[in-house]
Structures are given as structure tokens and as C-alpha cells.
Amino acid sequence: MKPVKVGLLGLGTVGTGVVRIVEGHQEDLQSQVGSPIAISKILVKDRTKSRSIAVDSSKLTEDPWEIVRDPEIDIIIEVMGGIGTTKEYILEALERGKHVVTANKDLMALHGQEILAKASEKGCDVLYEASVAGGIPIIRTLIEGFSSDRITKIMGIVNGTTNYILTKMSQEGAAYEDVLKEAQALGYAESDPTSDVEGLDAARKMTILSTLGFRANVALEDVDVKGISSVTQEDIQYAKRLGYEVKLLGIAERQDDFISVSVQPTMVKKSHPVASVNGVFNAVYVHGEAVGETMFYGPGAGEMPTATSVVSDLVAVIKNSKLGVNGRQAALAYKEKKLKSDEQIAAKYFLLLHVEDRAGVLAQIANVFSRVDVSIESVMQPATPDQFGAELIITTHNASKASLNEVLAEFGKLSAIRTVKSVYRLEG
Ligand SMILES: NC(=O)C1=CN([C@@H]2O[C@H](COP(=O)(O)OP(=O)(O)OC[C@H]3O[C@@H](n4cnc5c(N)ncnc54)[C@H](OP(=O)(O)O)[C@@H]3O)[C@@H](O)[C@H]2O)C=CC1
Ligand SMILES: N[C@@H](CC=O)C(=O)O
Ligand code: NA
Image (tube, rainbow, N blue to C red; front, side, top):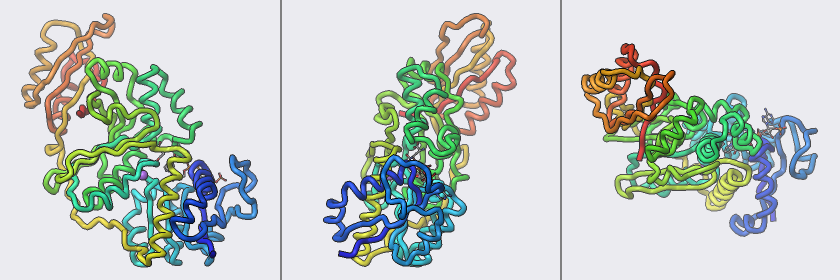
């Protein structure tokens, strides 16, 4: 039987897993798609590099066009990463009628709509399940499983590296830099891990999820982003005392037609299911008007989980080809995007302040909250060494982001407040 020929762009962490699954599960895959699947060429940067799997060296090439322009190749799997030239390869492959499977969230977040439009025009599939929450089938779920509903909230831990770091900091008191090195060695982190720790990787994933969930073209610039590099052991311990865990959360919300999307370290109430998602695991909580609350959980990064999603997309493309329905699934955004203003974004907050330890300071602080009309939920003054003055932990009831900013601006003018050490959104 004639095999389906696949060109693989990249043989790193994910590409290696793809080869293992295509070779190791060949019999199961064949019985699902009705023909053998052959990875016929593989793009690498360096053909001489030693690899953790044995591959026929004649399949390796350093020339992307040898794959993209090969008329024998039906499907391209892109797991090399990058944006500029990678986009060129994908567009050229589509132009030539090849279907594309990609794990590249950087590219899909920035150019997804253009790539999907080209795929539609050419009657080709572009599937990208691995691009968000590696091993969790969340993209399919949003496109197909919730096609009948109107999504109001998507909240998720969508970066495995930072969840791994925060978990080790919380459970073992580990130092941030040491755990980051571990996450890199385990193949979780991006080639430049700054995009993990500064929240950009999660923001890209939230761009993809919110575009699908709200059916409006959310851009990366619409996402308010803060990473975990400023999270301290002290913050994590205070969160625990109050019954919270610190997680890097992506939060996309819709009220009426207005949406907001953000990524930030958030204190999540321990009773919320997201709070117990640890290590490299990801979870995406989805609330729909009709369905109510749902949550999807699984490994968010790493060789085999990510490759599982890539190869499942490959199976879907081949099944579509057999049915003659390629190019019909492209989920193009069709709704007008309306972003919430800071006055419309509401949340509860945690503030940790270092203040002068003298009479009247608490009253001045309470006065600021009162003037700005933000209601305080609790105040705690833990015993602290004298040289720091006093530490104050304040949690608020729901307040708009605009009001919170006003509170912080007013605090800047109070000499009794030495530093606003941390501010966290509270969830759960
Ligand atoms: N790692 C993970 O857990 C996950 C990764 N992803 C995404 O999957 C993609 C791949 O990630 P990952 O496997 O970790 O990356 P790696 O860095 O491990 O692998 C990249 C591969 O692509 C090849 N490559 C990179 N640039 C070029 C180039 N310009 N020309 C030729 N070959 C090139 C490299 O070749 P060589 O081997 O010779 O260096 C390598 O084989 C990225 O988009 C990433 O964001 C998505 C979900 C999870
Ligand atoms: N670096 C990413 C890899 C998967 O997308 C992560 O840590 O989640
Ligand atoms: Na996924």
C-alpha cells in the first residue's frame, strides 16, 4: 500500500517524540488511517549532531526547501520553532497543496489567522493542537466540543516550565534559578527560557485559546502580561498562610461582548482545582453559558506528551484526506473584538506592603482605600524584624483594575509606605 509521506521540520525534543510515535505505533496508526505513514525527510540545523534516536542519515537535510518543495511529500510537520522563515516554509507548503501540523504557538499567535486563511483558500488543513498545553486536546475541545456554546471564561496554567518552577519553590523551598535549569534539562523550556518565565509563552497560548473561545481575533498585544521572575519565596509562603497557591495563570474573560485577556502570577484559593495542578502539568478551566464549569488536565510540555498531540493531528489530516474534507475546519475569527477598559476588569487583590511601624499608618492606608472606593476584605500584620518596619498584608473585595492603579498611585505619595512589595490577583 502506498504510504502517506510526511516531511518533518525539526528533530529536537518534539520531533524526536514524533519519530518515536510514528515508528512505535505504526500498526495502530495504519489501522486508523488505512495506509502506512512514512517520515521521508527530516530538517535539522546540523546533520552531524549526535541524536537520542537512530535515524537513517540519508533522510536528514539542512535545506528546508528540499522538504517543502518535494512533490512526493503530502504533509509537513513543523516542530523546529521560530517565526520569520518558518512562516515562509509553511505558506509555501500550503501554496503547494501540502497540509501542515505545527506545535508552534509563537507563529500561530502572531500569524495564525493569515496561515488559516491561506489553508482555507488552498483546501488544506493546518492543525496546531500541540501549540497550547502540549498533551491536552484543548484546541479540538474549543473548536468542536464547545461549538454549540458561548464561552465566558478560559483560565489556565498553560506553561509547564513556570508551573514546574513554582511547584518546586512552593513544595521544596527550591531556588528559582536552580529549578529553571532543571526544567531546561528536562526539555520543557523554550530555547530562550525568558519567554517562559516572563509570561510571553503563556500569553501566546492565551491569544490562541481566546481567539478560539471568543471567536474574535485576539492579538498578542491585547494580552496584559507579567511573568514569574519577581515571585519570591516570601510571597509563596504568605499565600499559603492565607489558603492560596501562587500559579502563573492565563485568564480570558467575556462579559456581554467585551473581553479581557491577561497572564500574571495569581494567588489561587487551594479549594480551586487549578491550585492543585503541579509540576509540568497544565490545566485549562473553561466556563460556558450552557455547559457551566469544565476543566482539562494533563502534561503541558515534554517530548512524548507534545508528540502525542502532533501525531493525533497527523492522523486527523490523513482521515480528512480520505474523506475529502481537508481545509474545512479552519477556525477563523468572525466576531468583532471589543476589549474591556480598566474600569471593566474586576478582581480581588493581595497587597504586601512594608510600612513605618507607628500610630496612624493603618488609618492613612485605610483612608486611601476608602477614597478610591475599594473595599478591604482582610488586613494582617505578621510579626517582622524591626529594621523592616512593619509588614502589612491586605486583601480586597472585587475592585476594578483602574481603582487598584489609583490605590497604588496614592500609596506612592504616602511617606509612611516604604515599599509596595507585591501585588497579586486573587482567584477562586
Ligand atoms: N518542548 C516542548 O515541550 C514543547 C515545544 N513546543 C514547540 O515545538 C517546537 C519545537 O520545540 P522543541 O522540540 O522543544 O525544540 P528543539 O530546540 O528541541 O528542536 C528544534 C529542532 O529544529 C531544528 N531547527 C531549528 N531551527 C532550524 C533551522 N533554522 N534550520 C534547520 N533546522 C532547525 C533543530 O535542529 P538541530 O537538532 O540540528 O539543532 C532541532 O532539531 C517549538 O515551536 C516549541 O515552542 C510546543 C509544545 C511543547
Ligand atoms: N516551554 C513550554 C513548552 C510547551 O509549550 C512550556 O513550558 O509550557
Ligand atoms: Na493541546
